[in-house]
Length: 325
Image 1: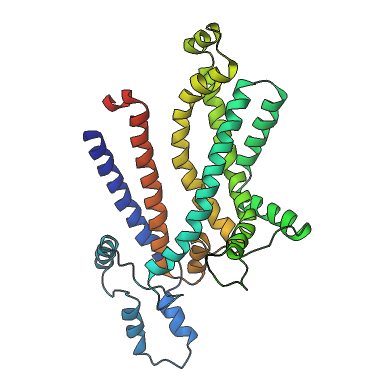
Image 2: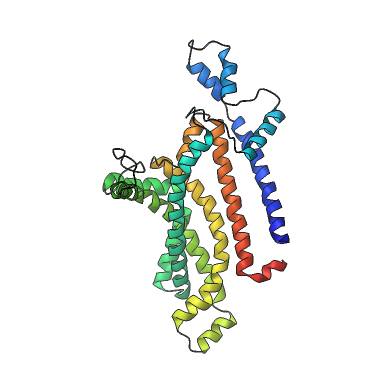
């Protein structure tokens, strides 16, 4: 319990620090969204309506510290204001709708990448020095070195434009009505293949390299030598002796992967016009939609902190020796 309380206090302080940066960051950007809306209306709005617009969108006139305290209070009450671009929808509604798409895409890509990358790392480490190990290691390093935007554009150009095997954008066929039917679900899966391939390509290399290095460090341990001396099969030693213990440090890479895929999903969703959080953030930046930008960055921050907290707890559960650390 003491360990959990220490970690909770640490992550709460980190969240408040991130929320503070989140408050000041949009305000350092040039342009005022209300002034932009007022100017675009030309002579259709009288000057006295400017204050009404500010009150409508929740912009507080006053010292910066007063705005900051109002902003912190809105975070813990769940009132993130109303979107400027998607007015009159509240920010929670806009982000909640986009969150479903991003979680579905991200969750599937993370599970597939972790499973496949871990398996490739295990086999490559067990057969280190072989042709399989060389191909997998070089491919993994290359995949982690290429930015997500480059991977997205290459995959889209080859399989979308050149070969024409998959659609170039959208989450589903726009002509279909959203419904729980085989036709609509099939359209979702068909349109999600290219974004899924892009995100898996970005993630799988990191899992492969991490698992391979962990396995190689353990293959020379005494208990591995003893297991082989006992006459156990290579498959049993590889999976139940080496891979089982090498998997522990790989758990921490899941938290890092969350941050990587959040950044990668932003680019991927913009390239494929996917209606997730990344695309919403991009549109909000163009429109100077401060409430949506701040809400989106809060979601990213909270996701990273929760993922790291879960990893800390998982470490203690998987390795009881860490309880006294």
